[in-house]
Image: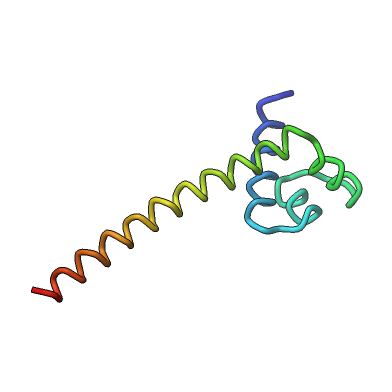
Length: 82
């Protein structure tokens, strides 16, 4: 697989993870073809793994944000209690 093809696959996976439909994500990544081609591409294990990894990174960032919010709420509570 050429580097350019890998870039397009990554972009396709990013588009899917962002909520685009299969065909829209396929065309936006620079691929040409039918809805069937987009469906076949999205069903490939390597694409599914990429999308799952993107979701995992997003969830990890949300957990960090939740921890920060909780810390700030606790700080705010103790400032108000003083």
